[in-house]
Length: 148
Image (cartoon, one colour):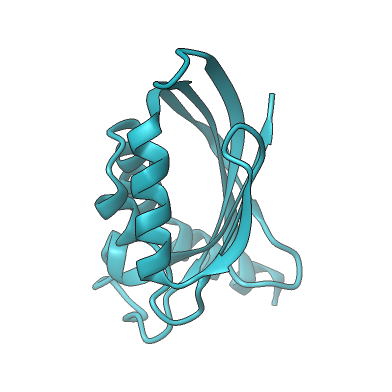
């Protein structure tokens, strides 16, 4: 039973690099539209970000787009570095993707550094086999960050 579970997890994670790459490119490019395509369309998105952004709420995909459009307009990314290791979430589907996000506030030129955690789960109704694409197979349901 254990070997079957390990095989299932490893085969699912074979498709993960494309979604994590999409997230990294969207954040590094300050592209709210590209990031929004990775969000859950049905479950909503819980976002919790510390100062200087100071935001915590559950949002629809459309609301999250407008939030990140405002964030990226004011806080310009100059570095987005993903961690190589993915963390499985015990008792929940999916995994946690972690990255270091450095940005500068365009209003006062202050730099900030966050560690960001993306909870990513299989998208409901996604194909079970080789037809998974980064956007069709996975979705972000939660984004949390801590200031470093």
